[in-house]
Length: 85
Image (cartoon, rainbow, N blue to C red; front, side, top):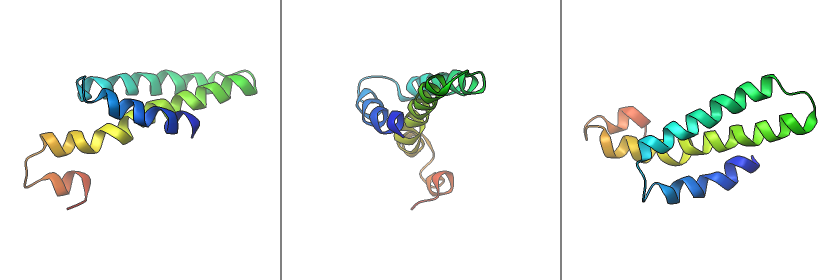
């Protein structure tokens, strides 16, 4: 939760000046390597750090996916894509 709560505003701020699709890719990469790190952790602190990095990767999806879909999906299919509207 710590990584998620700290990284969500950072990704939302960066989305104004960088390509959101690229930021989602960065978050996916962080999430992938952190998940692999959780599987190969050897003590409490290594799994705690990897879990925080998993939260950072998830923050990119939480803060960027819905606005990205809203901007790029056809207007008549936005509600079906993210189930709101």
